[in-house]
Length: 104
Image 1: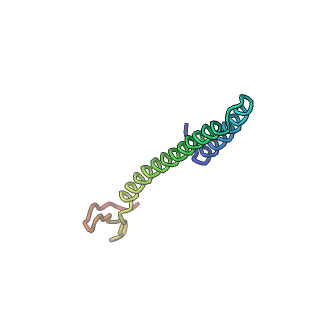
Image 2 (image 1 turned 90 degrees about the vertical axis):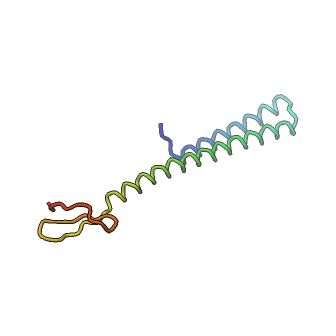
């Protein structure tokens, strides 16, 4: 299942907010010290921030791979067709004559 980057970041941000609120509520209900509560909240923030960073890196990596494939395909099909006569074109590649074919 492909999820857009913006959706992933939005979900992670929402989950982080909900978790921090939950930690705050439970810490208060259970008389957890402020210091302990802050340590737990800060660690949670670090974990979610790393998840966002990893999501962005994964997204960028996938897009770079797809872009490289597209660039290679464009190079393959971008050899110019040069008309040399009626119904005849020449496709050249790297300054060398590669093929001749009748034009449709």
